[in-house]
Length: 404
Image 1 (spheres, rainbow, N blue to C red):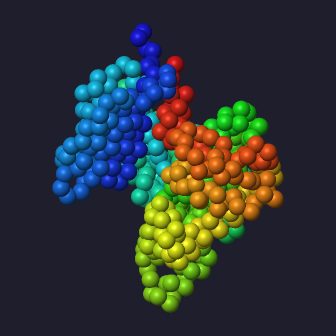
Image 2 (cartoon, rainbow, N blue to C red):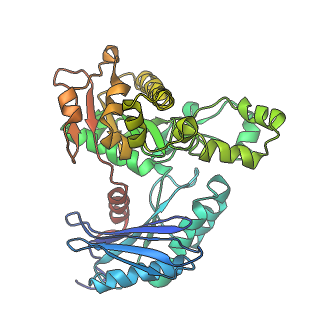
Image 3 (cartoon, rainbow, N blue to C red):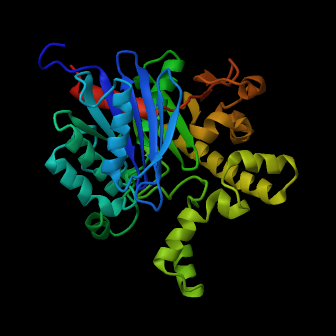
């Protein structure tokens, strides 16, 4: 490599409060050179590191990880053992998932002191996520200060939502003072899947209107018009919208007041209820869709009701986003449930032929790993299963910003 020329590698870091996930990608392919996870950061007892080279076997070991620096140093050691060290000239950038960018960040951003300070200022909007994201960035900067650090924000893809969709109908001054509006999350997934869906149809993303259903333990929907997000289900926080694994999704705000007055619950107790003890888990005791489907097959009424509530909410959003877009070219299912639960896809679309939505049962139940259509050829709206790849999206955005 000539002096000043950057390589093709991007390290993607997803720093959580007690874990760090990482992937090293070669953007010339792109190909994955290594994948890893360090968990139990800062907890009692040893941490756990799992590292898988691109073509090798997984290595797993316990080790002390008192903080994020120790976790990243351990990951860097594993990469170096494979000849993929962070000091290699091939490393073009480190891309960081940052959950909340507020209205400040609408695109991937090279991190400097001012950017870090702004991400920290946004901590009240994402108190469980942004501090860990900042810790990961600071540690990566210390390990190799010469490599650009790029922040890629979950909220950025949704900053194109028009004001009439982003604003809540509350007092304007209060909303502005406390930055209350719809931000949306899972943005890297929605960006990747909407674009990949257009490619599956053989069309330019600018010509395609897509409804994306990101269905995992956390779940969100988006309406994407010509490559731009115009509506999404999550709001100020990831609590709003679809029924999720442990989150309630949409709920009458007065439920909070009712629980405070009648049950004597504090704000923190209501927060824990709606975020950790609601959704599928609150309805039937399970937040794993595989287990719920098994119980439904056995005639479990509680699981059946939970499934029906989950599907009812999905169908409401499909209908609403069809109205928002006016014309829908494709409906895309993604993430753990969306990619793997054929009964969920079938139930969500059942009876929506009036909206141009149909599923071919054989295609829907056939095993497949890549992006694929599961609607009949004559259907007016394509229905697709598109595996998400948020790490590749982060790497792509980071590389586009700093790559030569």
